[in-house]
Amino acid sequence: MSNQTTARPDSETLTFPPGFRWGVATASYQYEGDCENSQWRAWEKAGGIANGDSAGVACDWWRHAERDFDLAQQLGLNALRLSVEWSRLEPRSGEWDTAAFARYREMLQGLRARGIEPMVTLHHFSNPLWFEEMGAFLAPSALDLFTRFVARVVEELGDLCDLWCTINEPNVYSVVGYLLGIWPPGRIGDARNTYKVQATLARAHAAAYRAIHERQPTARVGWAQNFNILDPATNSPLDRVIAGIQDAAYNDFFPRAVLAGGAVFPLNLFAGDLRDVRGACDFLGINLYYRERVAFSLRHAGQLFGRRFVPEGTPRGDRGLNDFFGEVYPDGILRIAQRLGVFGKPIYITEHGVADRTDRIRPWAVEQGVRNVHAAIQQGLDVRGYYHWSLVDNFEWAEGWHSRFGLAALDLATQERTLRPSGQFYSAIATANALTPDMVRQFVADVPASAG
Image (tube, rainbow, N blue to C red; front, side, top):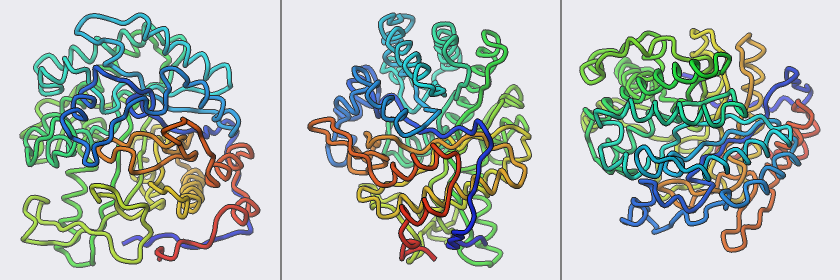
């Protein structure tokens, strides 16, 4: 069982390869504001956010994204991940909003003009209302409708982007929406449809992959997978077996579909034919935040007989409204990169961050995350970029505005941004393309007391 890295080597400068991408990750619904045609807006109106928050104007990107593009440029970043909002571009089935496409063109041009390479995500949790009402990715026509959308986006914006992330965190979308019920559509315990949805997303990813390459043969196309490190609580055989089963069910379904074109028993009973998914990626995106421990428990049948918990004394971010944030675990970056080496594809860390309003732990998490990326590269893994989640505090789905992930704090009343020390630290790393001992001494306090 791997332990949290707490060593603080401060005598060596870690230099990254030329052209390494230092970026931030964002998402349309969380940043743009006023996405009235999204199922998330309907979810808010129905009281789906525990504290009653609403995205509202969010970070006001639809009018003023360039303000944060300037900030990213000032920080020395050369990459930014953003998504396009399906509910804006196709507000009704088959009807396209030309003004919305024009606005996205402005945004992509604005990034390019600032020397920032865009990575565009095509689906980041948000559906058009009309698509949601027909069953979303359980609808018989879901595959065709999503592929039509992807094709139109690439035709409209492909001259400004060739780095595409088809789907963000298909495992989160399906598990939180269909098993836990705290995201739309709010189903609880629907294991069958949890995996049917994820299987459809896998086929949608593969169809999007082909549609993009038909229109843009040199495009780089992948997806972003959330990985939650699930380690056995002890070395007992039962803990190890149950942790392995939970890991396969949560972390492995989608990558296995892409790698092998199938699913393991009994998930294959829900998945249907996944043969067309095999090989459909040019890169892999790793979204890594947390670790949980798993102990065998007959009382937790709904969790495949494994009780998940976070031990006392481990580093944690701020408590969430739903209290589902685990141990902050940057070492997982190296572990998952090693695990994905079997694909033989480039890797991007498409999200890594922590909910931390006061910056008490984020600088340490950035430092350790960067160290793990460097270690992966030193081991011969083709890691090409690190995208911190996120640039500015943003609407955090079921957490509303409660959880703050930004390198810059956001005042909702004034839209004023205030760079946190972690933002200054990340800027120093990106500008130097290196992590130096002086940076660590300046920005990172001792390892958090809870780490160990």
